[in-house]
Image (cartoon, rainbow, N blue to C red; front, side, top):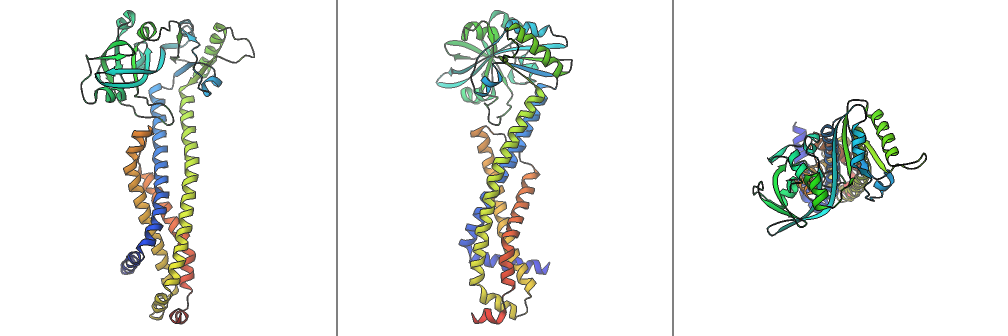
Length: 401
């Protein structure tokens, strides 16, 4: 304990004396640790989001999208699914729940002097229960609203924040395009996604209202969501057969639709988070290696300047081992301080990333663990050779020099 206090007192004296060099050293480490902390929190956030999506969809759910796999990858939006397809899918054995959805992107929404551009979703009334989406204010529209194509809507949390801030919007009117629409509810916040649109940035209206009064699209749907009592893989095969027959697709021709199970979506999000980890993790490791080199070079310079001091310490009885430990302690202390600064910055910037880039971030004990581990290893690896060099200095030669 006494030794530790001595090491600490001596280390902080040296850090103060060489403060400019120390500042450069731990700045590099802090930036590297900041990168790693953001990666870990982002991956944790992505994994949590994937689990949330999987749970909200349910393991028995299947999504059928308009457009082929290739068109979706090229972001070419085409509507190929129809009401008749939804009816035909509903007759497949085991399917007990169907939601029909038509999305209309980039619709301008106004309330008083505020404007916002968002996704307008036309859906059947079971949309909210199907996605297990609870309400913060008001409630959903019903079958009667759907039947009469009523101009009523439910706001996603982000749209509510943009148009109303903290005002109660239920019962008030907004303008979507040129259509006045009454707000009857606000959904609970679900947060951002990795590399995708903000889930809360949407307005949901009855499907018939969107088709007849907003988009003038009476036939096609964007996607159909369903639940099955049977094995999802078998059900997907049956859906594929029905749709290919309905669309007149011949053998060998590509599907003009895309089918995804809840597990497919979970796996897709997991792959994205894994790729993100691989890419950013490599960049952060390179940053830490560069920081380690800088730190090692600064230590070499410091040792040359402190040769006389080392010689005096050796003359007064300091062992080689003591000098080695002293320099290693110094190196690891600098990197640990850099690590603490990096983690602190990641806490400060975490909310900023989530707010501006829609990247969900979750801070767990893993962030602290990774930061301490990487800081310690950087200090140990970069300081070991300079510390060995310092411990080998002969006292008489050092004093003479």
